[in-house]
Image (cartoon, rainbow, N blue to C red):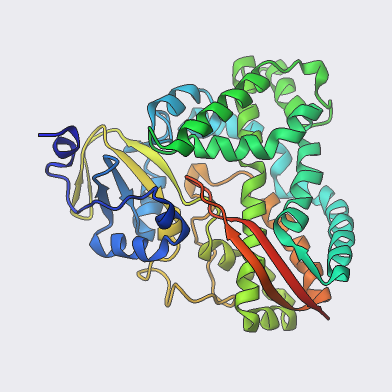
Length: 399
């Protein structure tokens, strides 16, 4: 009996879906539905891992750290998990809570209020410039703009770090894919480059007012160890950009495809918060992270074994018909605040308030300036974990 057959034996329901095939990544939603129809969790026989795919089960698992632990890594290969030991996202409480208290300081709503004026001025100028052209590339031209202009400065790395943050972040996410996958191999090499840079940083080279320098001050005060401070630099570097970039570009793509919803938002700007949550529900920027199952567990009749890996498939949970009526329909009046695009529980994305602020700031100016979006060209990024567009050329009708 092969290793795969031995691992699969007794694990039901089971699917031979190639979860990381390019065509599945590009058009995932019919596949997610088939998995949800099969059960709350489905064994992926090609990868010897469970896919937890229903909304309630993903949320329940994310708050059950005693069974679904992050401390053994959130990737699907041993090398990335081993290399990432000490990074905050690879921890559980009580350590996670202690580290997160320090990490969150510049990301809480009160601290972000100071950014609003700066973000608004930058967004207004960029929107006016692009709308004035009549046609523009929205991913690099608009979605990248605030994260790469503001967030890289806020982190306070050296110029090398600022220039490479987006490249490193994409590689860090790719590195969490299955062993042997070409994107995983390339991602691990990029992650090693990023770790090497961050671990070699001299404190004196950092912006003293930046988030990175704040971690070292926390170490001076005894809130962290110096090693923890260095590892947590990766927590800032990795997720700081992609959720915002993918969220905003997906919003533009959805509104171009659903002009009735854009008309509704323009007529009712107070729906902006709901609209952002609905965008994130429909097109989750991160499709999944893994957990290790620390003891035998029954998930609504599915028997999971100690030592198994389980993917929390956020993008599937967010389209679960058991939770959302007509989940394939884009509806900005829907109350989708309980989506799991940013995770849930202790690992709820620390940067979600900043991401929503950036997305909302840009959309707020587009509401005033654009009557209609028309897609000229689109190209979807094929990535192990991230869901987004690498190109979205839009023609706009000005308001």
